[in-house]
Image (cartoon, rainbow, N blue to C red):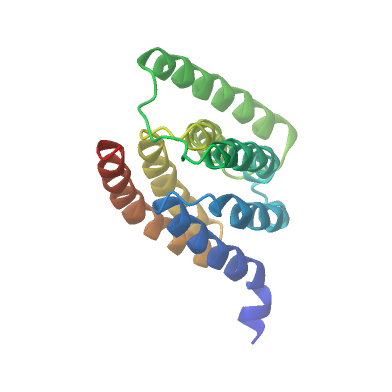
Length: 191
């Protein structure tokens, strides 16, 4: 019982995370609603565990969740879904540069202003996640590649930080992301 009370936030956000990724896999607009609740609770969890970049990223996720929900619903109101598409090639280098710059900035802040024990990895997953959620909101197929990398690194990081349920969820996310990419690619080909 003590274990459950110590890990209730981890368990709850994990359950919400599983619902979220399954809705993302199906390209369902309802993932944004589930994501909003999950991210709100994630702010508290990550702060408690000293994952300050992840905590701060949740605020960005909340804003992107609202943006993604509006963008996807706008297309639904026109009686068609936002199409799954490729990220324009000109955007790939720009977003790689943005991710690198954000990684460096977050690392600098974490290493200088916090007691973070994992500033490199916390900054890395946060910077890639910023790009990933933006690409998801735009419904770019390549967002799955970003999430595969983020999920692998986050899985290891969360086991290290004693967030076992979320760590296990991220291990599952890797598998789902591979299948999600294949499903979205097939859905893209059918439009």
